[in-house]
Amino acid sequence: MPFINVKTNIGVSKDKEEQVKQRLGKAIEFIPGKSEEWLMVAIEENIPLYFKGRIDLPVAFVEVKIFGSTTEEAYQQETAQITQILKDELA
Image 1: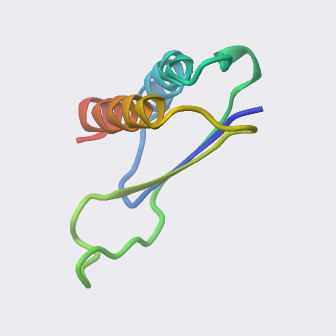
Image 2: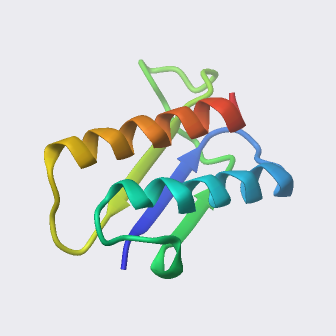
């Protein structure tokens, strides 16, 4: 069962949360054999996160856990998709 945990130091509306969740559900398919059907997603907002010693920069920390392994290419595609989703929806 894959798990994607998103922590961000900004507020996330329910609409944006739903958009992120839906798009992450599609993005997990870049990992062969994984689908939204078994995906768990957590989105934690307003978490104190520091980057470069600063708290005033909007940032996100994303953790992806999957059972098993896959190719480096699949990991890279998944990372690119997640990064784009968060840029589109939360920036």
